[in-house]
Amino acid sequence: MKNESEAMQYSHSFPTAPGSRQQRHSPWWLVASVLLLLVLVLVLVLADAGPALAQNRPAEVPAAARQGAVAATPGAAVEAAAAAGASTERFQEWLISCEGPANGRYCMLTQELRRREDNRRLVLLEVKPESMDSALAGLTLPLGLDLRAGLALQIDDGPAVQGVPYRTCLQQGCQVSMRFDQGTLEGIRTGKLLKVRVGVASGGVADFQLPLAGFAQAYARMVALGTTAPANPAKPGRRP
Image 1 (spheres, one colour):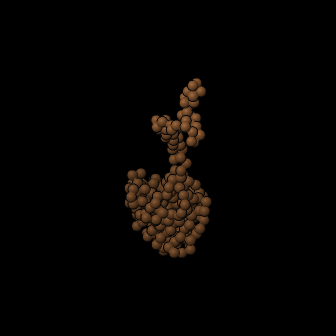
Image 2 (tube, one colour; image 1 turned 90 degrees about the horizontal axis):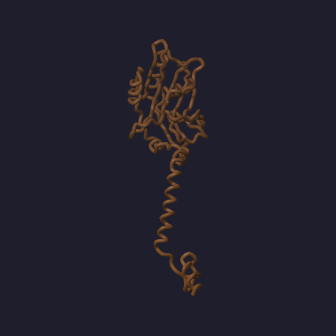
Image 3 (cartoon, helix red, strand yellow; image 1 turned 60 degrees about the vertical axis):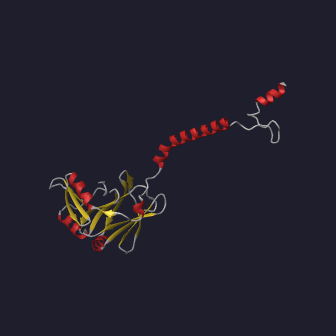
């Protein structure tokens, strides 16, 4: 009797072999308790890992940018410059903004592309003339790009320049520094679109198109203002 009692006492923890008369099913409350414990452990693990995963995940290039569904809105840039106390002149899609006193003012020729839905900036192009035939330029693009292959630039349907390298990525975006020579400036003056193609870190590419209408007049005005870049200029793109 003692041996039979002991066998019954431990039958739930140590099931007998299939077909044995002593085999018993575990009570439902024990199964439910084990499942509940597993769910709680999983919730705690995900709660601890969530912030780390969010920090390590690269910023996603907006889906609208992948499709080129962006709008040029120089009006937003005009309002921002005015709020900062800068004087502005607008030439269709381009904006000249100047800061500082007349004898030491700093001017920049810019164009922005912003997303229609929330006015979020996607692309900033800055141009600083060195002369009528040479200029420094800087592009600021969204985070979350594949930096290894550089980007591609194309004016209308002309030959594309591949592998333009990125300089750095900061909080406001990934930056590219360039110098436009006489031929490039002439193409921008007479072209309709400057096309920018970038690789995306999560796969695929994103295409941006900057309208060139008004660039010739805006560039000539910048040169006339006498605010050309110095002989040893600072790196372009320094102003977010």
